[in-house]
Every structure is written in structure tokens, then in C-alpha cells.
Image 1 (cartoon, rainbow, N blue to C red):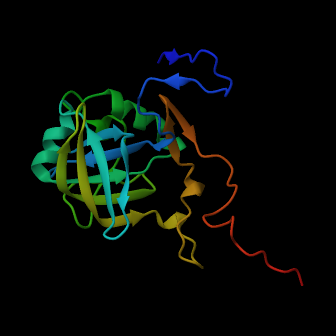
Image 2 (cartoon, rainbow, N blue to C red):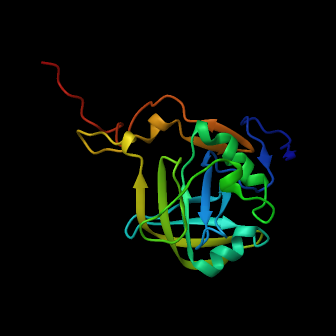
Image 3 (cartoon, helix red, strand yellow):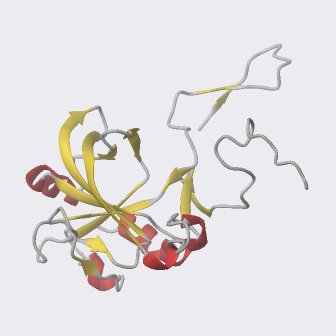
Amino acid sequence: MKRKEQPGSVSGKVDWKPGTMIYPLPAVMVSTGATPEEYNIITIAWTGTICSDPPMCYISVRPGRHSYDILQRTGEFVINLTTRQLSFATDWCGVRSGRDHNKFAEMHLTPGKATKVKAPIIEESPLNIECRITEIKPLGTHDMFIAEVVNVKADRALINARTGAFSLEKADPLAFAHGNYFVLGKKIGKFGFSVEKKRRRK
């Protein structure tokens, strides 16, 4: 991407051509299909949360992708979060087409039964978010599939037995930034830490 220089600028900033520069993003594997014969996986970074109550999210998919027609017809999908261990499969499922490959079989991934949707979960993923499409919004290169989260499956090994909290960081979650994959780094705080009252030492 070419940078546009600003003559006489002393701010240390340069203008860039408008583009998709909100990074990092999750690199997720989205599983689709109502029957084992059509099960497929598409890797997506254009995804995110759009509402808390009801819980809603989105994925954006190019109309030419193999999963597009499956999504349109079935109205369901599962967002499977990825990890360092799943990085090869995550990338491979993004550059190979389900028209030519059985991605579950070739990447040795296990299609599991979801609770609320017919699309399969990926058993090797630490967290599976079952989604039901409520709207398809054409935008340009991609169409946005807006969906309600109808169920979440979590790896029992990552749930704190005492508090019930889910510790995704223990799974080495994968992120995507400007064409590259990363795992999350060191935790430096939690939501609200800037206003949290410090406990007095006894």
C-alpha cells in the first residue's frame, strides 16, 4: 500500500489510502453445511461482535466463495476460535476451496455435533460459537452475514473449576494483522483496571 506524503508535515504522521486497517483481528475457522456431505470450513478475519443483548456477531464473505451458497441456503454457521496449534489448518482452509477439498479430512479436524444448529463444530477448537443468520447485507467485495449467537460450546479444560471463568488465553489464541498471524502476548491489565481501587495492604 502506497503512503501519501504530506509536504511540510511535522507531526510524524503520513496519510494512507483508505483501507481495512483495524488490526489485530481474530482468525477464525467458520464451519458450514447441514449434512456431512457438504460440511466445509472457511477461514475468516472479517468477523466480530455487534451486539451484547441479544448476543450478535457477523462474518463477511465474498459471494464467490464456496461457503457463500451454503450459508445463504442453510442460514447457519459456527465460528470456531483458533490457536497456535491450529495455525496451519487455519491458513490452509483459507487458501484452499471446499469445491476441491474435504477440509475436515485433509486437515485431520473432527466435525462435532452442535447443540442448536446443523452446521458442525470443530472439536479441536477451544470455543465454538453457534450462529443463526438474521440478515445478509451486500456491501461491495463482501456480503455481511449478521447472526444471532444461539449457543456457545467451550473446552472444559479451559474453564476454571472454582470460578467458572473461561480462560481462552491458556489456549494460545491466534490473531491476524495485515496478512500475518500472531499469538496473543502478555496480559497487561483487565477491563476497568484504570479506575479500579487498589486494595490496602494489611
